[in-house]
Image (tube, rainbow, N blue to C red; front, side, top):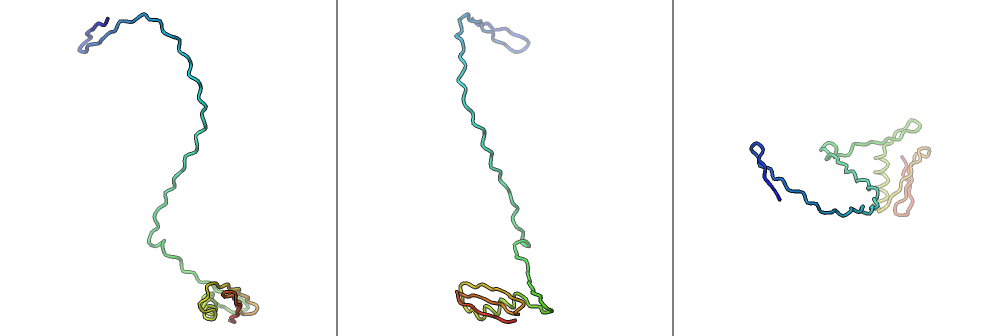
Length: 112
């Protein structure tokens, strides 16, 4: 049986206790827990600024025995002789004052 008691301004319902036998509670089987996988860390990168988007200006100068030759001059001379080659390898040999190249499998030489 339930009865209602008033305390102050709120009504509280009180339930009568039953006298039933409670069954024993069995322990739940233990679950094997796996270690948590590490969470991937998301790296946020700032968008490049307009000034950062431009490649830096680079100039390479070869100095040997009092002479100076820029890499651009060597490259221009080799590409003039190599023509429309698909593959070009350049080997600079300052003691010979020359650049040797292989353009599409054909060797060549440019003196500077």
